[in-house]
Image (tube, rainbow, N blue to C red):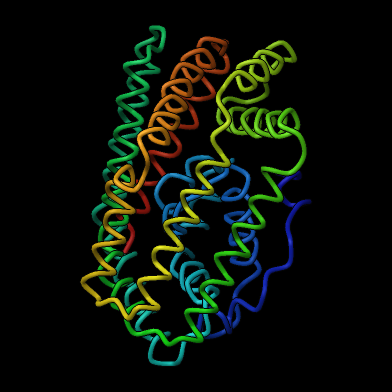
Length: 327
């Protein structure tokens, strides 16, 4: 935890950005910082709402999960408003849609996350070696949860975007470029060996958050496995930039709300539709290799580390159940 706190950065004025009333507590400020830190650390590349789905599972401590989720509405409003300068009417719409989304999410999606975690818990409790079929099934389920979580955001996002002005579109262009530039600086800087080294260290940190400390031998093996995993980050960023450019072109051409919603739906539900056969082949190869790597990593864990993993899963299940039942 000390490592997290030592790397916090000062946030912009969240009150003004999010349109929130009153002054945020220090606990909220710490919670938001931790969410932002872990979102960057685990390399979540997709839309900001995705962090509500599964990123919380990577946080070291259920108290952070609770703080993060309970203040997610304010953080999401802040995030959305950071893309462009919205007027008072638009901000009120954003607040309304985010509030409704989080109420729906708490009631409908958190129980499904619990079900996913219970399935994961059952695999670990079974005590047998993890196989690729297990990992594939879990990956498919994560993808389904991701789509289910974001589907309700398509229509309100399209409605908002269909009414923005030219100056706001240019702000959106700048925001996309700024975020993409930050990720490139973080993950594509240096030689390929340096990029692979950084990815390996992120993987080690991620595993240790769930299982406790790894031995030097385990860390060396993880570095070897990560080094042999195809490096697809540059392709993922490029594809996202192409989708962003397509969205901007649609907005500049005064695309209808229906057209924008259709574009966002394809981006969300069937992104392969906008990929070339070669690009799709590369990404499928990466996912298959990542599944095999997951099997190998699980095989490295000691009995103590698997017990720690089970303990953390149980805590997350309990936390999500409490959040789902909260009013």
